[in-house]
Image 1 (cartoon, one colour):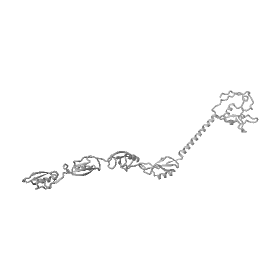
Image 2: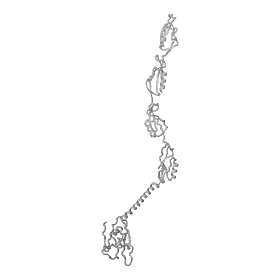
Image 3: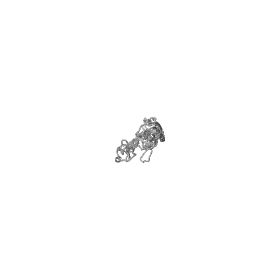
Image 4: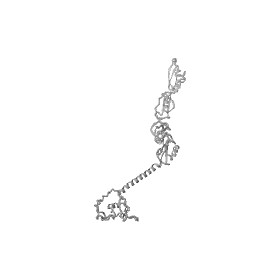
Amino acid sequence: MPRRPAVTDEAPGADDTRPEPFDAGALALLTEVDPRESGLVDDGSPDRTTALERHPVATPADRPRTAVAEPEPDPVTTAMPVRATAPERPGGPRPPSRVTPVTTTARRRSLKGPLLLVLSLLLVAGIGVGAWWFGWARYTTAPGVLGLDEAAASAKLESAGLDAEAGDPAYSENVAAGLVIATDPEPGGKVLDGGTVTLVLSLGPERYDVPQLAGQTEDQAQDALAATNLAFGSSKGRWSETVPEGQVIRTSPKAGTTLKPGATVDLVLSRGRKPIEVKDWTGKDLDDATAALEKRGLQVDVASEEYSDTVPDGVVISQDPTTGTLFRGDTVTFVVSKGPELVEVPRVRAMGVDAATELLEGLGFQVATEQSDNYLGLGYVFSSDPGAGDAVPKGSTITLFLI
């Protein structure tokens, strides 16, 4: 703001009874305040006077002639009292001057800052109270009930003002069946007053029995193991006379064995009936053939016994089947030799040589003749070899000794 030039009174020694001049700079400050507070605006009150009536502005003619330097106004002044002197009344002393506070823009700013601070503090306090109420005041701590049975755990929760409900049970390797192994929320966790705590009860250790799989196919057995949380290990084939090929004979471990989840189970599968190769026992002793075949699970049947001039007694003449593949319980049939047929030599002593020869040849013998030591030329049989009564194979030669 430019400095005002010094003003001097035009007439020294002017009448001192005139009202004390009101500086124009003070008037400018008055306009900064509320017009109603400064008296510049009539608000209708009967006892209120305007600022100009209380503080008349001195004109250049009314100012004293003494030069007065007007100070430069300070823009940062917050309040400056302005002295306004009322005109001196005739016959009495002057009334005391009234001091009117003038509020500047800096003053309003200084009040606005603390007000915002107070409002901010109130807002933070409100948020804190709300967070405390919704975050903690309405909640309580869930008590620990691990290791208790359902009844005891429920009673403890009810004493804390909480409800209990049973959730899905779970297996536990360390907690016995029927005891609490977990809660929701966990012990020490926050839960609404009157809220519910879910109890997880133990089923005990998780175990599964090996199912009965005999007679099932390999695929069916694997599906059954997976359904009981057991794992398929491997398959081994074994001959079986009773279980059809491709079906399970047994399991390892055996059915009914209790295992942990994921344990492996091996399968023993049937390869069907075991084939037995049959060799030819013709010309072999029947007793040896019988022992070997019965040891392999085959049956031996002697269909017949026949005389044989070429096959010794007790030796296999023929067999059925002679070769090939049989199975346990099948039968091998043999024809066994009785050896040569035996015929009793008849008595031919004292018979004529022709008659004796005819008789022996009729029995299937061969006849030969020789002279005895006492040969007389009579033409009769003195003796025979083999002698009368001996059993000899049919076709044998009988020697007749003549006398």
